[in-house]
Length: 125
Image (cartoon, rainbow, N blue to C red):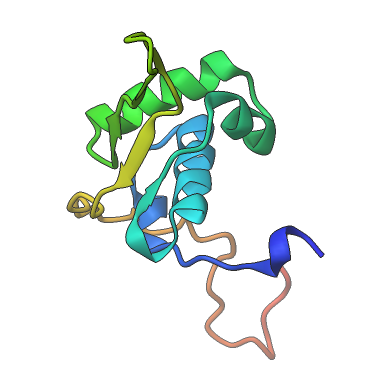
C-alpha cells in the first residue's frame, strides 16, 4: 500500500501551462499534500525526495510557482519560551489555476497522399 492509496484530482488544464518538469512535479506534489483545504506544509527535503530532485531545484520551482501564481508561500516561525524563534516548514496555499492562454494547434502534416480510387491505384513509392 502506497500512502494509503489516496488519490487527488488535477485539472487537465495543467498541461496547457508552460511549466518545467520540476515545476510540474513540485506543483503536483503540493496539490497531493494539500487535500481539500488547499493548504500544506511539507519540508523542502520531503518535497525533493518525493519529486526525485535536489532541494535547490525544489526552491527554484517554488519561487517560479509563486511568481506564476500557482501557489502562495508563507514563511512559518515557531516562537520558543526563551524569546527566540526559528523558521519551520513553509506553509503552501494552492491557488486557483490562472486563465489558460488560448492556443490554436497547427494542423498535423499529412503523411500519405490521398488516392482517388483505392482499388485501382498503386501504393506510394
